[in-house]
Image 1 (cartoon, protein in one colour):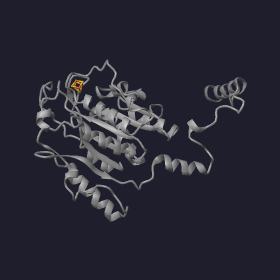
Image 2: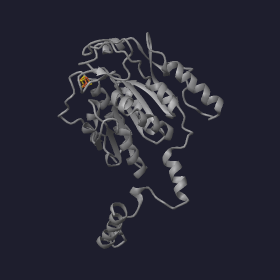
Image 3: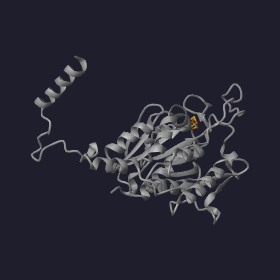
Length: 316
Ligand code: SF4
C-alpha cells in the first residue's frame, strides 16, 4: 500500500500564485494519503484547462486527455478494470460546456467514478471567457461586456442526471474539502464535488473575499441528513427535493457539504458484471492474455490471420 509520504507535490507547478487549484491538489493529496490509496491502482484523469494539469501533480497513474473528454476516458478505464479508483479533475467549462453530455451520461450510468469540478466561473487557461457557471449580467475583468447567458447549476444538474453522491466544497477550506473527497471516493457510484475555486487572475467577482462570510457548512445544522437510508421512493423524493432547494441557495449564504447521497443504487460496473455472468465475460483487464507457460494466447500467425481477415472484410 502507499505510504503517506507517497502523495507529494512536485516542484514544477505552474498555476498563478494564489490560484484555488493549489488548495484542491493539497486536499486530494491529504485525502489519498489518509485513504492509503495505492498509486498503482489509482488513476487521475483530466480534460483541458488550468484544472486539468492536476494529474501532473498527483503521485498516481494520470491521464491528461482531450477537452471535455475526461469522463469518457475515465469510463473506459473503470470498465476495463473496475478495481481501480478513478478520479476526474475538470473545470466548469470543460465539464459543463463541451463535456456536458458525458457529465449527464455518468449520472445516468452511476459508474463508480469521482468527479472534482473546479468551478471558477471562467475559462482561465484561455484568458477568462465566461464559463457555463458564470451568471447572466456578470462581467469579469476580461469580458468586454456582461455575460448574456444563464448559468448551469452543477448541483441541480447532477441531481437531475442521477448522481448518487453530490457535494460542494471550497478550494481554500482544504481539510473540509479533503473530508468530502474521502467520502466521495468511498461512495460506490457516480460522485460529484462542485468545488468553488477562486481564479485570482481572471475572476474579480468570485474572489476569496467574496466567499468570506458567505459560505456555511450544511452539516452544522443537526437536522441536515442528506444520506438516503431506507431507499423508499418517499425518502428519495424528500431528500432530493431538500437537496434541490439547497442547490438554489447562493446569496447571501452559500451552502457547502454533502447535499445528497444514495448508496443503494447499483453501479454500471455491477450491472455489466451481472449481465456478463450470462456470457462468462470478464472485464478486459481481467482477461488472460497468455498461457501458463507465458506464451501469448494469440501468436503472430493467428494475429496475422485475424488481421488479414479483418482487412478483407472491412477494406475489401
Ligand atoms: Fe488559476 Fe485562474 Fe491562473 Fe488558471 S488563470 S492558474 S484558474 S488563477
